[in-house]
Image (cartoon, helix red, strand yellow):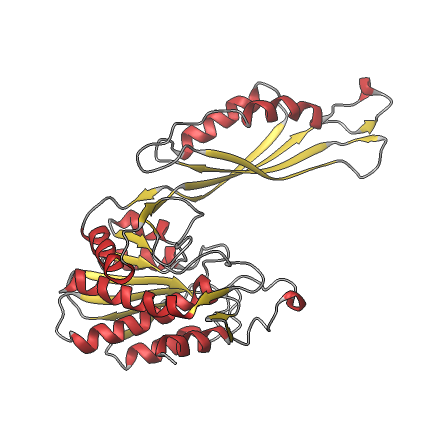
Length: 375
């Protein structure tokens, strides 16, 4: 059994539901301390964060990731207990196996192998690990980056261990992410009996033309790095549950995943303009989850492509698809950020798993990336 698999098993046994780290970082810290890393705990609120660094010179190459996991869902639907890592048909099963405890284990063993072989490498290696990525993401990586910046500590290159592979290991990496902004709309009306339309103001009817316009709007055409901006409604609620009452309000939650062609200010202005054409009795609250970012071709993309070509024999697709990640908090500081991890087919699902062979390939790839950057 490889050390990467052993570490994955140890991490999977810990029930680290956001923001409870459940001892995962203690395990990682002990492993890293034995290899010359200096551990610094940078906790904020209920979130545990670890900044570990080996070396004092530039460039700084950091691995970033999270120990927290999403809930298991119905435990009785799992083929094996989600916190008892189970090996079957070349895969290891457990909540967090792919997202992203397998990646964390591969980062650790990659560093061990690299340091053992190249003890006098250039620059520094660091780990930025949080327990608040799957949740609100307010006291994790974003706060650590602010603290590092305040004291003048810079990360030059960063690999985030999110599960980015699609059909086979290493076939896709993320070189950026779209921005994400959420809107919380309340359309106000006047409740009353359905039989007296002259006495009511139906917010559902008022929303109908807004829905037609907003879902057919062409927000932009995208660009060389990003697909066109998309709009989706995630929640809509109105009505009292009975047949003969017109509701007094309609509540809506929507999201835009936006390209670098737009800014949050432009989005807000365009959405507000559409709603204003149909209603003057509403409230709209915004929540920005992250701005779009891109790592253009350069040292890190070259290092990753070369490593994956060596390990898999193929050149990966460079993508900006998928959801948000903590990379959005790291890239604004001028860091080259790439996300690379195992196949993402089972993440957040019942029977989450990762290929054992892919874990070893991931560790080897991370080691080669270190070599390509720091040697």
